[in-house]
Image (cartoon, rainbow, N blue to C red):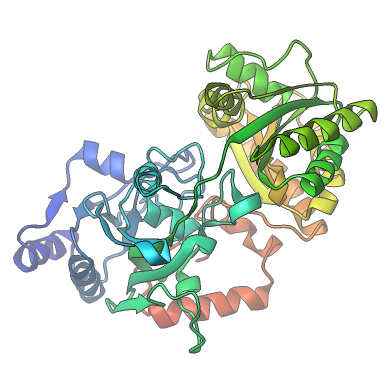
Length: 463
């Protein structure tokens, strides 16, 4: 059966379905933010309801057509790339915010709702959607669920998984499942909801979600601290974490600060330059909390853990300080970074970073390394920036060699090769550094149950 026959049948079955096959559309919706694979989609479909998605999946099973889900396309592991002639299912037209359950602090949203739109809806109800990251203005809830997205507030609120009270999904067989119904307590056997969270669309497509909303944080206040070495970063997490109820604890290095300032996104937080920086955030609900924060700052400075620092005095200053962290990904994108998104136990972070820097410097001394991450939850982003004299292909080939050493080090510390970006295709060759062969076989068996014909985002996570 050919793609054209499949599309003709779709036209007959769903005459109002938008289908795009022009080159610009195929290139646009067939890729995500990764640059490792060229898009090669056959068609882009734009369903408007769960039932339309189900009919698409049923027909795809009949015609043996591979489907790839597409949300905001901000992924960093090629999980939403259609590189092998697949048909893309875009959720752009499924972007409605539905029923708000006031007593439950819960709202139903379709998969195509943009993260920022959900945040703004929560604010309109004097509530808070806690998952936040630099791509919130374009990422979609379905994609966030597919990768179990984290972001800058995980230390307080947890990952996307922690916000999902219910899901509507279309399985790889075309069955519609409504999972958990939004209940906090439901002890009735297997909770399939958690299988679909983080599955990257390989079991089926999420079409709706019941999202938990939180209380609005009060008087968020940030401190940016310049520190002499990475071990000081970890010790500051312990000191401030014990004294304050932190909403964020981020870190980045001087290279990241230099790039952000050179790009004009913001200015230096203070005159001193240090190897690493910490950005921590907390709710200053009283003068006592502010006094505690300053007391910890002073004691840490006396102990040599802090070289310099600044604390926000207004909402405007809070946003300016956050630009130092949130502008990094956009800023370094022009350097064609090779990204690694890894996690290890906080107890191992200092030794882990020292090992990785030695590996990269020993093998590729002309590579510039940019570190940043959500240090409060053990998540590090290692970005190797492409030297001007190397082509993209040459650079990525050299990084593949570095990757092996990096992931061997991750395995040494019993960490994860992907903390929050998913596996997709870029991390697929390294899955066994985090998952045992037995685990991977169980994962494949689960996929076979939900997607027996292997049409759902085939070739992602594992083959």
